[in-house]
Length: 464
Image 1 (cartoon, one colour):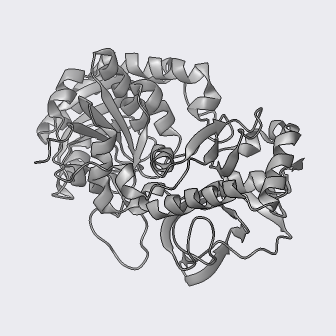
Image 2: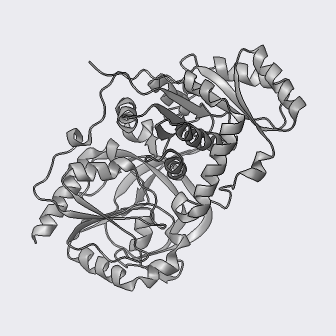
Image 3: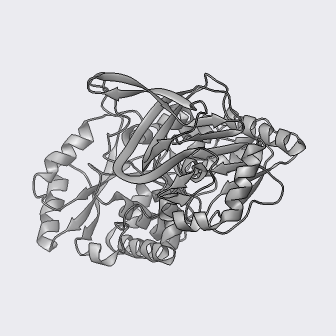
């Protein structure tokens, strides 16, 4: 018999920019301060918010991305990440019903991968964070629409954000009462002056250092003061019947314990917690290193270079010439290397004019255009991660671009780009020897066989 799943609330909003990150992070911190053990989650492929969630909750922030891992894994992953916890707080993505864009038709009420879909999968109530600026009595119509649009979603309450005055709050509360949506809190507009913001750009918690801790503390204090945390806790529910996800059951354990070096530190912060869990379950001895200052760990038999913002640290990365040379030499000898986005840039010949590892003969530079979206991709070449023909769903998120491609290695991925005037074929990334380098982010929990394959390749390399 499956034990009851951890109670949960989902923090959502009508649109991006409503303040759900402040509320979700602050709620995690306030609940923790009240003695609760909080499981932090984020819907979608976001890497930045989970870092702040981790600071607030004291546990690793995890993602619930039904597009990347498949809907059937959401419940098991939730149970895994919330094991032993008193309550889970799940921060949504974009607007409540926004998800993977499908240009082929009108679609269903809740798009694939949306916060609404994930909330329904969990059987958890949604707390809607509304930016109150510009709202008055008409807020009732907004809440009525969100409450009735998708019958699989239950709006458990609303938190009013950026409220202008006591009178403004009274009017908004009357509007909420009119449609029967409880008000669980009202944050004053001056809170923008209280909470140190992340609007310095896309700054991760690791890069933001002590300021990130200060920001989380301020968010937690704000929520504790202006939100009825006990009422939120009383709402929490979930109804997961599936068994807990177990990394040991997802992979085949290899012989030996090859050292798999995983890049971390301020330049390489984009990684999913389950990735390392799967590597260890497959028998890897995971060694985290910081390419800004460290060398390759002793006995390295494979390297993982995840995403991040290396363009912000290009000069410092280039200054660690010994590490760059070691990776270049080892890659030439067949070292298995899994490089995603920031990892691809690190393997390039140059990044914004700074010399990188030169494993892949391309130059890269930071640009003004954001490339963003899910990709249904097929592996075009066999590699230490995938057989040719393997299909995955990944996600692109980068402002850099390749400006000089001299590399003759075969492409890693192929997919079709959806455009208003039709579909065009795209080829992306590179496979050469043991190196798989691409802009595409993948989620290991959605492709656990790639981890078995990668660790097995590390074992083979260690024997050479």
